[in-house]
Amino acid sequence: MIEPIWKSYIITTTHPVLNPQQCDEVIRIGQNEPKIKGTMHGEGLKEEYRKSSISWIPSIKAPALYKPIHEWIVRINNNSFGFDPIQLIEAGQYAEYSKGDFYDWHMDSAINMKDMPPVRKISMTLLLSDPKDYKGGYLQILGDNFFKSEKSKIKLERGYAVFFASFLLHRVTPVTKGNRKSLVMWFGGTPFK
Image (cartoon, rainbow, N blue to C red; front, side, top):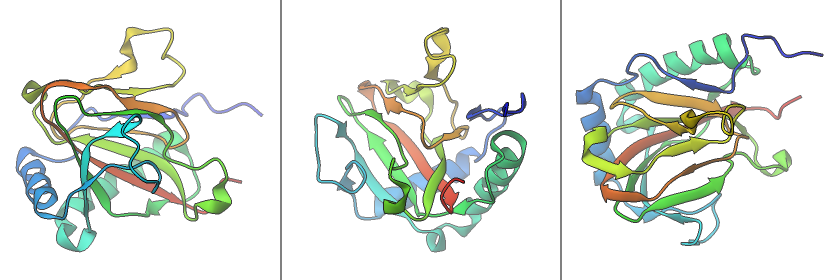
């Protein structure tokens, strides 16, 4: 069986998902929720793999922000991924990366999917910061063009997002100056068939 040519596992939006006021609102909520150190898949802190500060944004605190993201994921899944019906499966994660913070290579879905119902299928990273406010902190996704192109660094503008298959390896390179703020969400459902 051959995958259809329309299928893609990395989609960067060509229009903002959230406007600047909505980005400011996510930052405000994220900074007012309890902050914790970032971990890997619920494991304890391992600073050799990840160093960042995160908080969780429940949909009840930001229903107007979740709506446009939901509309984007439905459209992108239908047009590019073609996965079984998916839904938002966890609260959004507000993340701050200060100078020296990073997140090494990882996947957002577990290899043994029986350990992770519901299964994460599509991940979203949305940039909340103005890209002028920090240096470094590049999102890199190990996809088809990673070794063939200089485009392995995903460059987003404020309010724009990248949606990618949760089983792809990806990382955030160390921030060298300033503070990078992002919103991460996962969409999924039943295990892949």
